Length: 146
Image (tube, rainbow, N blue to C red; front, side, top):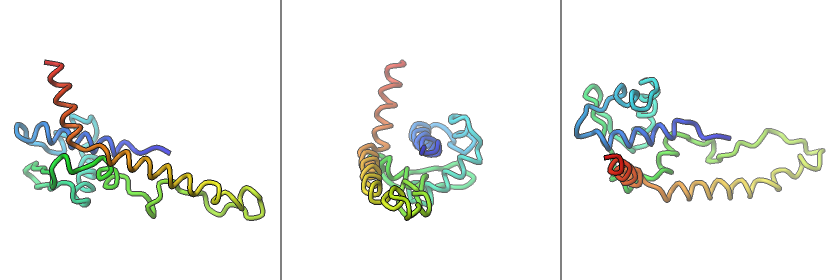
């Protein structure tokens, strides 16, 4: 299992918009140049973020704004917008384990609770970090580079 790069691309988008919103026209082309990917991918992610209510996008003008303060948008919010999980379950269980097999018959009892616990721990950890953390950390790194 691996969370796709769309999640980190979305965080990169937020960092770019926050950093350049007052000095540059932040368009999908501008973002794609920073992320080094295709603008079509950026537009798809922007659409997901907008649909999740995390950003507003003014078409044509390159205007992207946040719908909430950076400290109010968690990594978990971004993750849910970009990586929707089927039926709320991160782990997709293989279909139809063999009930005639002692392992197949009991595999759900063995794993279900553990997998829910793992997913909950990951989600709770993601809720600890906000876009404000990215802003503050980037400002610190830039100050060190001056």
